Image 1 (cartoon, rainbow, N blue to C red):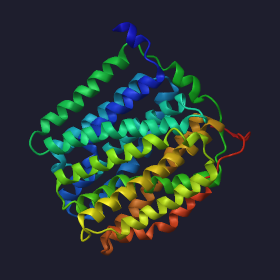
Image 2: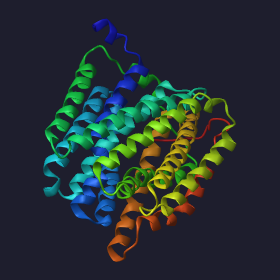
Image 3: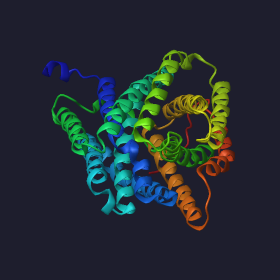
Image 4: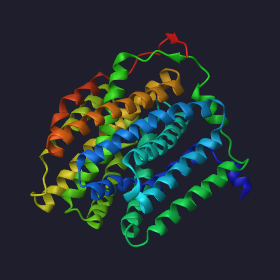
Length: 390
């Protein structure tokens, strides 16, 4: 047993780390937009929570960076699970008495601790010749583990919440024990993180894309999740089964796509994927609960496909560009600018929801022009030599 663990490859460590987190996210954090809606029945409350989540991420990022550059790898891994389990405990048993500010900041702490580690780990095992295939594989694996968590979470959330907490705690404890042992080392990750190198200049185009991408990521994972809930008659069981069915259908599609992305002409296909992404947001604004069940299912599948395809091409481009610059600083800059975009966008959206009434469909249509910013995200022909100081 110890021999097996001592030979745990970086790719395997990354896969286990991400799969366990994805499963635990499915148990409860995935349902956060629905739970907050059920608690407050106001879109302004949900967007305020999202804004505080972005603020929590930004505040945590400096501390995360300080721990990382000082080599406290195991501490960061433990914290990622500790924040996740704490969030689940608070939401399960104290959501009614917890202020949105506290809940959002806690969610931001968890998001920072998990997503930064996942990006650093993925970047350390990928290259420009395989980043698309690896990210496609990641989508398949994490998609299935997430949906397994959603299945358990949707079934036990109302009847046996302690079981959800117990499952999340066991997952955290198990991986924590592996991480604390001397059998796993972060040397490979540090070798390829370039965290000791000066920061390379990030173009204004990239910064603008990062600022826009943050709000779109959270629109997908929070507001659109709430929209799907409404489209499934606000029934948690029907919602869970719908999301799982979409995931399985997409897994089948991407099984055939992921192995070809690295060999395809990136420029044209990235632009085509961006246009499909635009079409997906048009469909989000168009689809309503008045449609037939078949039409809703087909619409949801089309939206999910367009979104997943765009994210596949966008993330390949992102990690390939990171390889052309100081990897670590490019990754952390992406997180910083994206979260700042989230804070500004959702704070403004909260203010609008508080002074006037409009639907989520109107939000989806209003943001369509912003998608054109993604076209600016072009691959650099060669690494930049410009350096700025820390």
